[in-house]
Image 1 (spheres, rainbow, N blue to C red):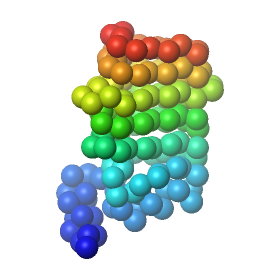
Image 2 (cartoon, rainbow, N blue to C red; image 1 turned 45 degrees about the vertical axis):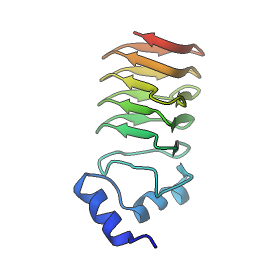
Image 3 (tube, rainbow, N blue to C red; image 1 turned 90 degrees about the horizontal axis):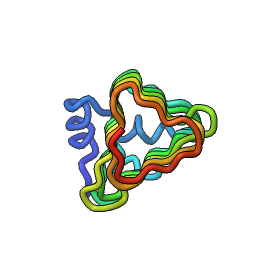
Length: 143
């Protein structure tokens, strides 16, 4: 049996939403398939239509003041996704970020803009202030 209070206490101490708070995002239009394995920072503001999925020990970290627009999709299955402060993901047509391979790491730098229907897969390092505009697919890229 899962001790929800203990789990919530650990989450709070590390700056994450409780299981109940994470679960409550779904009625607000944010898709959270598994609130027990999805960690959302207490400081993150998410708009309707954002999808957050983690599985198989994947991890998603979204820094304060990052903006995920409707149509943004982040999937960390076995890999890790990090979105830095003031990054913008998904405006003008969505954007997909998938870390599906074991040890895959995708990092989005501070103030980066990923918009217009593109995608990142495998390992990617998108630097501070970089822009991916439009339906561009990147795999194993340093920008």
